[in-house]
Image (cartoon, rainbow, N blue to C red; front, side, top):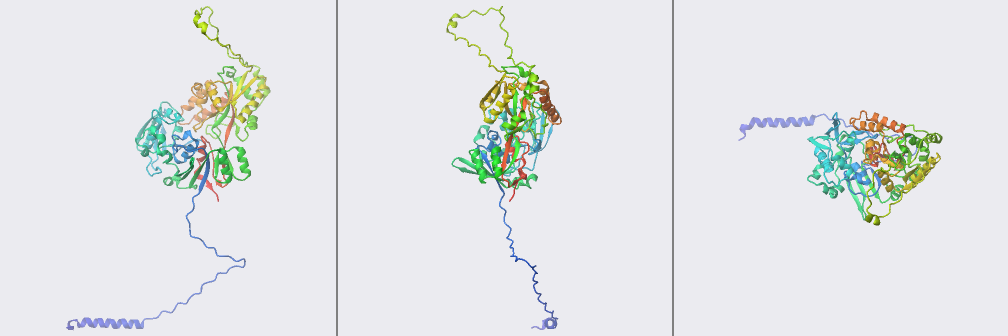
Amino acid sequence: MLRGFRWQLGLLALAVILLGLALILRPRLPEQPTLPTPTPTVPAGPAISPTLIPPPEIEAPVIYREGLVGRVQRLNPLFAVLNPVDRDISSLIFEGLIGTNQYGEYVPQLAASWLISSDGLEYVFRLRQDVLWQDGQPFAAADVATTIGFLQAPGSVLPEELTAFWRTVELELVDEYTVRFRLAQPLAAFLDYLRIGMLPAHVFNGLNVEQLPAHPFNLTPIGTGPYQLERLVTGPEGITAVHLRVAPVYRLRPEGSEEYTLERLEFQLYGSQALALEALQSGAIDGLGGVSQTDVIGLEQAQVVNSQIGLEPTVGIVLFNWESAHTQAFRDERARRALIQGADRIGLVNRHLSGQAVPADSPFIPGSWAYVGPLRWPDYNPQAASDLLSEISFAPPATEAPADEATPAPAPDTEAAATAMPEPTATPLPEYDFALLCDDAPAPASLCQELAGQWAQLGLRVGFESVSAAELDARLKAGEFDVALAEISFSPRVDPDPYIFWHQGQYQTGQNFAGVNDRRTSELLEQARRDPNGIHRALYYKDFQYTFLVRSLAMPLYYPVYEYALSPRLNGVQLGYLSTPADRFRTIKHWQIAG
């Protein structure tokens, strides 16, 4: 049966024989020797214990803790102007189209770029296309429209100082990432209004502005800024702490991919500055703003804190009322110059406001791009002041001329005369040349008392009156003063435009409380306002400051100091120009905690 496979079987048998021979005759490789393990030579000396390197661990987040005095109300940029606590926290969560640098100059934020028409009436903004809201939705022109729409809504529940201006502005959405604003008249400070934080349109679609104050968004905010809300800590009295963390979507942006080593921020809320100071001293918090120098000195001596010092956007200034009902002497430049020369300006500030303020030399704030200084005001010279005053009369303003005697008076109504109250007799004017009005807080009151004494040494009869802050404000607005120590504030604006304080057209309608009526300074302020590109504004403001000094329009006295007390472990903090205390966080991406 196998005859047909005879030759195949023969080949198979031959292959098996050849395989067996190959296994028997293969060469053997020599065995490899076992090499000894080398023993390291340890130099003579103390015994060294081996160090075990642990496996890598996930680093704990770096946390910065700050104290805030007050309560959270609405973490919404449209309401934040009403509450300093909301303003501070919201500044980290939200962004505007425009931001500012440490000199108060404008820099892009949510806007990539912008163009201004030659007449200063149109602003076209190209928006960034790499920005996400903290819930992952893209930022676009619709978000700008929603935010501005709330500000323009009639009968708005929002602060009037925000809405009044925006109702004069037209907004057009050019495309998904381009918006155009049209102004009724040129306003170089317009960019300042665009620093306000934007709101997400997809959250508020169809919402009426009256519903905004009670919307859940106010305690669950969604912004585009570097930090987002992580949680609110509550207690029996409400919210006691606000925890923020670096927003993951912000890390995707070029400016957020590096730095921001403070991964988490914890704001602890206190009912008083004293409680917050106790927390700072005990180490429960790492920072506290608005601390008095007296407290800072004690904490620094105990090596608990280091302090950063900035200037508040406020000028303490002595106003001479050009429209005083008591005297018209302040319309005379010589009278104003004499009183300035007869005041020991720097000595007054150093003696009464040491640590609270520094001497002022300009109606602008140092650190601003518009400030020119130091300006050289007249040295304290009582004799020169007395010589000038010898030419000045502080007599009361002339009364109206009596009625023409040829014009017969109407016949009296005998019945009415019988029941009429007797007319009051004229109260004689007080026996002084003018009165100095100021706040009744201890420091300014003592300063004003000494200032009145210095002027009295010039041979003047100077009255003195200290009143509450509320009454001082009311008297300033009503023009019921002769000379007053007032504080004029640029906050919350970062733009240095002083138009409302010194332009002659702002008497009674703006904040030109002293009725300053100088055409040259008014022209300079008008020209600066009409220069939207900013090319010549600095020059106009330089001329304004020198004119202010030469014509002695008022007497700048002091700039209040802002003290920021921080743990010595915190590095990289730079305050720069402060339009509000919230600007202290402008450089937070550089902050680091050592150790």
